Image (tube, rainbow, N blue to C red; front, side, top):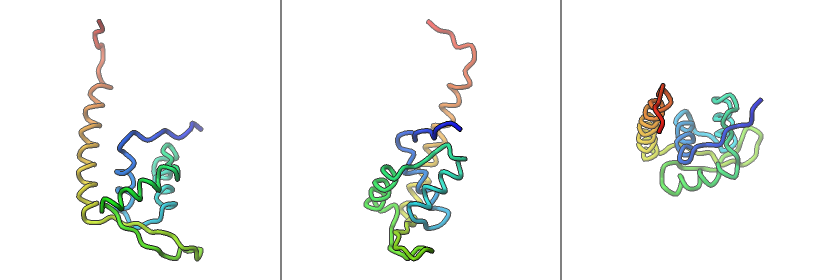
Length: 114
């Protein structure tokens, strides 16, 4: 199996918010959901995930609360705020524009060089 791909700059926040749009989750569940949904092509490492969660919480896009996990451990569970839902909608529109534009370049055939 190939190694997981690095995330493109600026996509981590969008992926986290999209994951949290499903339901509130703790960090480990967020990373696992992203990994599972991408058939392990994208892996979010702790060193990227938790700074992103803290940054997004500071911006008001997500909020966290301490809960007891199924195993009885304290865990910080995050949920998307109304501001986060607005931001997610904006980021998804930007992502769609990026995909369309990149697709146009990828689909170029017989590009003249020189």
